[in-house]
Structures are given as C-alpha cells and as structure tokens.
Image 1: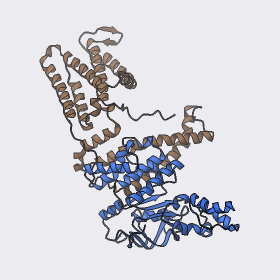
Image 2 (image 1 turned 180 degrees about the vertical axis):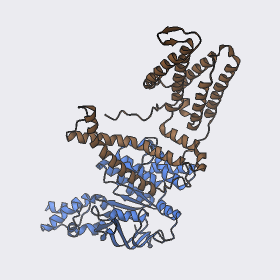
Image 3 (image 1 turned 90 degrees about the vertical axis):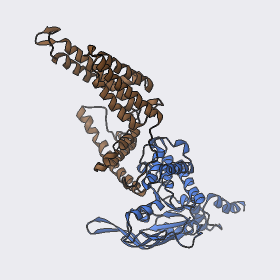
Image 4 (image 1 turned 120 degrees about the vertical axis):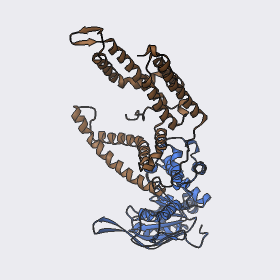
Length: 289
Length: 273
C-alpha cells in the first residue's frame, strides 16, 4: 500500500547506545537506514535485545539517537531546535501501545482513560467526548465505557489502550509487542483491531512482534538482528529465505517451515506458502498423485 | 482471598445524594459538621437528628451498612463517654463512690457527645463517603482546590497521584495474590506460627511486590509521556462539572438546615443545654 512516494518516516545512519555505567556503552542500533511510507503495515521482527523496541522508542522521542537523522512527516526530530511543543506534536502523530496492558492505563474508568491523551492535548471537552465515543466504537468496546479496567480481560484492556491512542488521532501507531502478554483469544482481538485500523483508517502501523503468524499479516517485514536491519521485504520475500532467518535463530511460520522441509526432502512443492490456506492449495495436487 | 477488599466505603446507587456534584457535597459536608456543633438546645438537637435521618432516608443506603461502618468507632465513643461522665464537674453530685463523683452535667455531656458523633458519622457517611466514588471525590477535591494552584500548590499532581493509586490498588492486590500462591507452592506458610514468624513469611511476598510496583511505575511513566502528559500545562477535561438544579436544591436544603439550627438556638433559649 505504498501510495505515497515520499516516505513518512525516514531514518538515516541512526546509531543508538545505552550507557550501562560511566564510559561503558552498549550499542543497541547501528547505522540504521529505513524508509516507512504512509499507510504501510510494517512488522518488525527480532530477538529480545535485538534493538527493535529501541527503534520504536526513537520514533516518538522517548529516546534520542547518538547520531543520525530521523525525519517524521517532513520534520527533522533529531534537530537541535525542537521545542517541547514540537516533541508533543511528534508524540501526538506517532502513538505507541506497549506490552503490558495494565501498565499503560491511567484512569479508573475506561472512558476517562481513553480521554487522558486528548485532555493532555488541551482539546475542548465536547470534542473529547466525541473522539472518545468514536474510539470506543472503533475498538468495539462501547458497552464497557463505564467499566473499571481491572474488570476487563487482557485483550480488552489492550483494546482500551489502543482506543486511548486512536482518540489522539495519530497518523502512525507503534505496537511494541502489544500482543505478547495476551492469550490466543486476546491476541486475535487485538490483531483484528490493528489490521482494521490500517485498512479502514489508513493508519501507518509498526507492529513489533515475536509471533511469525502475526508478521504474515503485514505488508512488509523488517528483521532486526544485533542492532542492524538484517532483512527488509514483503512477508513472502522474507520468509522464503528460511535458512537466512534460521541462521540468526529466528523461526518462520509453521506452514512455511513445513513446505521448506518438504522441498528439502525433494518434494516438488511450488509455492512459498505463508498462510495455511495457501499451503493447503500448494500441497493438494501432490496428495492427489 | 484478597478479592473481598473494597475500596473505601463507596456504595453504588442512584439516589439524589449519589447524583449531587462532588464539589457541592464536600462543601455541604462541612456545613453539616458546623451545624452539628452549633446546635445548643433540645430543639436544635432534635432538628439535627431529624435532618440526619432525612439524609439517610434519601441516600437509600441500608441502615445496616451505616451501623456496620460505625462498629470500629464504638470503643472510641464509649471511651469518650466514660471520660465525660467521670471528669465533668457540676454543682451537686448525682452519686458518689469513693473518689468517683458522677454529676448530672457529666451524663448530659456524655449523651450529647454520643449523639453528635453518631450524627457526624452517619451524616458525613451518607453525604460523602457512601455516595461518592473515590475517583469523583478526588476529582471534586482537585476542582475545589484549583485556586490554590495560583499559590504554586501541586493540586493537580496530588490528584493525579491519588487517581493512579486508586487505579493500581486492584492490580497490586491481584499481584499479591499471585505472589502468595507462588510462594505457597514453594512451601511458604502464611497461616501458622507466631505473629513474628507470620510477619517474616510475608517478606518474600513484599519484596517481589515492591520490585514489580517500581517496574510498573516506570512503564506507566513512559506510557503517559507517549500520551503527551506534561502535568497541568494546557490540560482540559472531558467531563466538566456544572451545578445542576439538583445540586442547587441540595444547597438550599442544607441552607435551611443551618438556618433552622440558628433560629432554634435563638428562639428557644429556655431549653438550652
């Protein structure tokens, strides 16, 4: 869905390191160059400690890079003359949803929590009400508006966290392993919400995940390994390089693995299937023989 | 096992007192307290009692709940009553027993004290604590104290802290439960042994709980920053509080209450106590 030719987010030669103690630095990102276009659904894969969460935190100025340039929506967010207002403007445009749903809800009532971001932006009360109702509808939680967060399931809480970001009307939402702590049902709910945001609202999505089957749903997969961009392409392109992924200890989706193994055994399988349906289609002719 | 803990004494409902603006209720509670302590004669006292019963009735809070809420205070009431009985000096003692002399004034003071304390607890309970959710209370307080922001008082910060504390109490209770189960599975015993041993057994629960609370605080701080939080600067609120006709009616009712007490104090001086 790269309908724009100018990238929405650009990273050029970005380096970042954490200072462990005086003088001891741990390099987290090395010379990153990336272009992300408006409306893209990008999955970011990588190990724990590969630097993928660090990458996310650079994009909304929770962290600032040691060197390099980051441009968001035509604005250089690494420039020295960024004022506090500019920082908050970037954060309004690039929302972020985290891993633990419990640790990102602020208020004791669902709708009050969704309103929190808008309240911080100083939006007039009537418009906040409108936005909160819209956001609740978008994530399908309207009937829970007056509930307390601790009465909700993990998936529901995560949808509330998403609604809180949507209400700020961002162009891009970064999901930092937002499905990692959820059960399969909750994961499903959240993934549906994420893809509908991308499809129906044209929101650019950066989905950081460990889960390969979630990465398949993206338009583009970026693999980060050891602080560097290791692979970048469509899910089909990335997951067809099974050996390259395995060499850095990453898995491929189960069906891709199955077909890859069959191929290795000399089976004449044609496609690099990503979904179970596609795999079934590819395997069916073989079974009929 | 920790699930039954309820926050404060809030008793959800839809009575007029539940619906009254929290700011108004905080002020009305103060007026009510002043009223109780200005009552000076029998009629004024009867009026206080009647008014308190009226508040209890319109709050629709079951009497049982209110009485239950007073249980912990019974000893305090009894203790102050006893002190009042024995230590108040009057003209002629009612009876003497060794060095103990009981005067009729003492009995009277003790009686009035008991009525005042009970009325105070019941009245402030039904106006404020039973009918106002903790979050509405915090919100009302923040808005009432808003003028103090001009004096650089951290009113907003305080209310934010309260809100977050209220938000995380159930989360931390749940977590305590989990940690206790985990420690039990490792052989910890929380229900036997001397008090000191039981307190010691809680250390392996408290430490992980604190560590996790700090981690949560860190996560929450980042999440709040991502949602453009920067304190009170340029912040608006979704729900605005406006005084509704019901709120003004409540104010009127309390005005009548305080006026009634003053009038009874003035016009029935013969019965003063």
